Image (cartoon, rainbow, N blue to C red; front, side, top):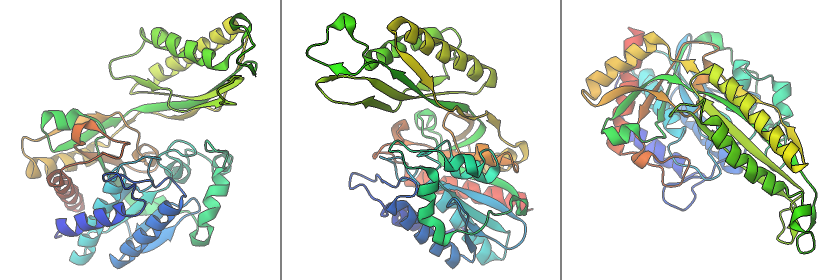
Length: 399
C-alpha cells in the first residue's frame, strides 16, 4: 500500500475552501448548512473516485464503503460556528487517502465515514450517537439548536440523498485520526499521540426565570434580575466543585441566551449551557448533583424559578488494546522518540462507535494548543507523520 502525502494534503486544502471563513485557514461549516452539504457532496465524489460505494444514511452520515468486511476510518467534516480547518476533516481525509491507497494496492479493505453534527449543533456527537444506538432517532428529531430549529427539520435538507442506516457488522474496527486540540504534544515536541481513553461528558441547559421590568424605574432591591442569578451561580459553582474535581476536570458555561436582551430592560429570564467533563463516571455524577443543588440554592435565595433541560451524556471510554498496539508500532516506526500515549479531553465520535466495535484514536499536535478557532493549525510534517502511522496501523492489523 503506497500512501501519497501530496494527494492527501491537496484534498485537505480543497475541503478547506468549502465554507472558508476568509480569516486564516478557518472554516464556517455547521451541520446541515449549505457549506456542510456542499462539502459532503464533494467528499462523496472523492470517495467514489477512490473505488468506494457512497452511502448517505437518514441523518446525513456519509460512508464510503469497501467491499466485504473492512476497517472503518474517519471522523467528521462539520465545524463549529467559527471552526478550524483540521478539526474532524483531518481524520476523514486521512482515512480517504489510506482507503484509496489500499484500493489501488488490491487491499486491505478500508471504508471511510464522515459523521454528521459531531460539533453538537443539536446534541452531543449527534450523527454517530444515532447510528450507534446511543440516541434514538425519534428522540434526536425533537432536539433543537439555539435558534429553535429541530433536528428533524435540519436533516430534511439532505433527504434526497438519504438511504437506510449502514449495518455496522461489516466493520471490524474503527480508528479515528484527529488533531489533539490541546497543548500537550506541541509543548513536548512530540509528533504523535496514541490515545489511551476519552473523557466522559455531561451537558444540559439551565434556565432562571425572574421578572422582566423597566431598567430605569425598578429599584435594585426589588429586582428579580435573571442575569444576576446566572452571575451568582457562576461564582458559587466554582467554589462548590473545587473539593471534588481534579486538575484534569473541566466545566464550561458556553452559551447564554438572555431575554429580552435589551439595554433598558431588567432581564426576565436566562438560559445557559452547563457542560462538564471528566474521565471518572462517578465524579461526573457527583458534579451533576452539586450543579443542581447550587442552581436550586440560587433560586431559593433570589426568589426566582429554575428549570433544568434534558441531560445529554456520554460515558468515559477506554481505547481497544490491540488497536492501540498497532498504532504504537506505527508511531515507533514513523516518529521514534517523538510519540507518547495520552488521554483525550475532547469528545469524539469514537466514544459512540465503541458501542458497536473496537475503537482507537491517533493524535497529531495542535500548534499552540489552539482549536475551535480560525487560527487552528498543524505543521504539514506532523500531518504527514500521522497519516503514515494510520496507514502503518491498517497494514499491521490486516496482517
